Length: 167
Length: 67
Image (cartoon, rainbow over all chains, first blue to last red; front, side):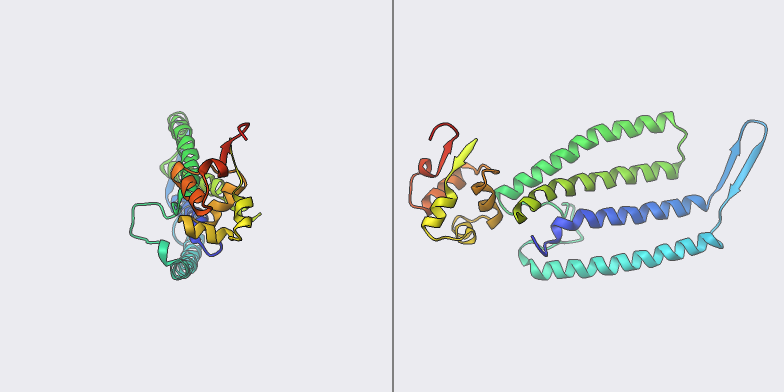
């Protein structure tokens, strides 16, 4: 499995999700927040000047570094594995490994775990949104965290097999 | 549970895992997992493996307690 990026693809996805969480957090803080107790109110403002600007600039630098390394790794993978190349423009998840019966089974078990996770996580999250006063950026970050969990579960399931193979 | 003697037969025929994998059209990892008993192959694959060793499928694979 050495050099097969399909195995590590969920890690790259998790990295990208963390970058998106950072972006939504930065943008979220650039908005005006008004906190009120009925009689008094307090306005909290964070604009894209000063700290906000530098946070966004640092984020853009991180994004460019991420994309450069990701692109290089993907190119390297496609060169080494012409039979199962990774393609950006496809609807099928890149991390699916269905080379033969074993990998079909490994992929099936991993996706089964992810499916079970979503059947619990999504209703739980919807209930939380209903009960708690979470803003739209909080909701967005919560959804991104759920997606992060999906890739984490998938990667952990696949890794169990890959570690056994390495034994 | 499905038991097998793929490793034993492979050693007798002097096949590597990769050799057998190529003969039956699967990855080397699949042969490794079958040998360890951690993956039960389909009937088609079990037959292909038996054919590669030129023997009956029952001589390669059997259910636990049926040896």
